[in-house]
Length: 427
Image: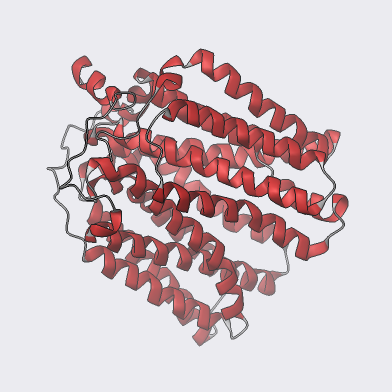
């Protein structure tokens, strides 16, 4: 990529946008491709959450071994870790809509396999784990495609709102899916698998109905340079490198999810119901903020808002660790989730708008790997530190560390601090 093309791509991150004409729409709901995509994402994410709940419960009922529950998550993470370079290449070279349909059909086949196995009495530990691995492969491609396809569904000025609205669908399904899966499981695992099959098929049908103007896919030679083009672009783009690395270290240090069972039992003496409330609070905060950003998108000072969100994330963790009042803890976690959602929307929008389409898949795949690594390593960091100094000090130190990272990154990445508009044009 030429220096001129790179400069043009990066300029989207801080240029003041020109005025928008009155003929341009001001709502993502006026764009049928995005509406179809929104419902498809809602369906596929809810179905995936329901399926994971049912698989976990049934696997534990079969084996009674908690280690197997950890294997379900690990087996799904391994494909994402191993295939991220392949995912980036494929999503940059082939029709992304067809790739999305293919992933949803694979998920439907996985749900159908579990349904048939339950109905015929052939369900087993090995079958469940093998199905989880197949789901992990499909999700490795699907999650990346669902991010990079958004800019092609709406006009450029509406991309920030579309990103926030897409996150709304994801958060809504993440909250409702596990609860619905648990409720349906009371009628039997076959009911859950049957509903999941229907929802995956519905998502594939909705995606097939999307009509978008597609550019010719990239067909550059498959060289080592092409495989690592995502890393190379991020390294040459200070604002994008800054926003990805800032989010990476914020989640690595400030995450509290892994220690919520300890807080529920030992700090708040609340029992399982308290754990449920603590787990739900960040998602509620994130969903609320996603709805706010859909209606009132960030139009100015995006870089400064990113740093403020990360600082809010760290401060919320400090407040959470410092209180023994459950209500205060729930509010702190809700603010933590809301701050994280602001960070997610800004990061995703900057990455999508600041990256040329020909390498967007590879850059997004690298971004996804960083996110997955920060979540996994963050949970390990929290658990290991808690075993040494206790849960409360571990969260407190992590929150303070996040605040320090935000301050340091303002000096290391001044381009990110100066980033102004998330849009190429003014909404």
